[in-house]
Length: 185
Image 1 (cartoon, rainbow, N blue to C red):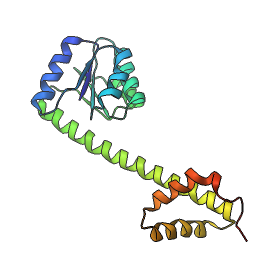
Image 2 (image 1 turned 90 degrees about the vertical axis):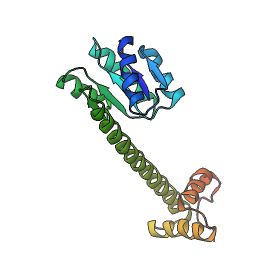
Image 3 (image 1 turned 45 degrees about the horizontal axis):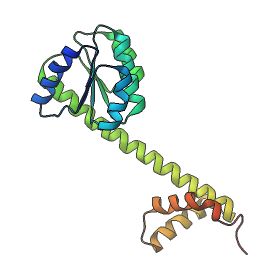
């Protein structure tokens, strides 16, 4: 896990709780300028961002992690702060914790990890769907066929070559410049 907070003393407290829960702290950051590169370099499963004196600093940390990495963020609050939670949610946090009870942390982390895995699976499914649709569009244009026929071309090639349909779709998209402009007669 990556932990970030404008208060260096709070980083040690958070690290102790995270370690006691059986997780490894792979990076500790205070500066907004450093948190994005640390996240990219270390690839944490979760980032915990503490609200210190400045909510703006915490929000900037959240922005950097969300926009420069692929891990969920949990905001850590020392007391309930609905305005901060609302703003943090707009910036991409998956959860917040406003309690020092380790079981609350454990549950929040587990839920976030599960939800983030589901999010990544959905994102992958949407990407595969978009790639398949793009390949179908290329085949429709190049071979003057309808949508169903284009899909059957993809599926038939996948079956014949004992390959995944998404791999065939990727090959079509990658090589579409080499395909004929119109169906050969």
